[in-house]
Figure 1 (cartoon, rainbow, N blue to C red):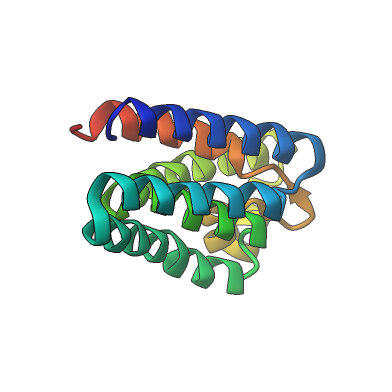
Figure 2 (cartoon, one colour):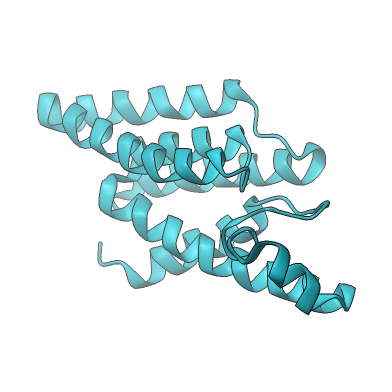
Length: 161
């Protein structure tokens, strides 16, 4: 997913967002805005105006799909801003890979939580979309970063550099 600087930025950003989300179920604006700006600056420095376009397209790729999920009350606003900022760092293709893997891991985790609660059938009927895309399932919440961390690692492993 890029050079050493990008890898370090992603690791720091994901790590900080994970800790915050686990502790408070929030990803603070200061974190997302800081890394959004850092992604823009790094790509401006390394790629000039083309780098800025790359970063902006990445931010949009992280933002647009998640606005839809957010409007369905599937995730929180911090998750939306997180993916927009991540997109400015890693670019459009990579952020979409991370998003895809994160949704798959979130669905798996949601299914495991439902099975654990022993009301799988009833809850699946109430909102199958929210089970496979969401961090909220009829009052049961889990921090979406629990699914994002393995999503980032999987994308890092499978997406060519």
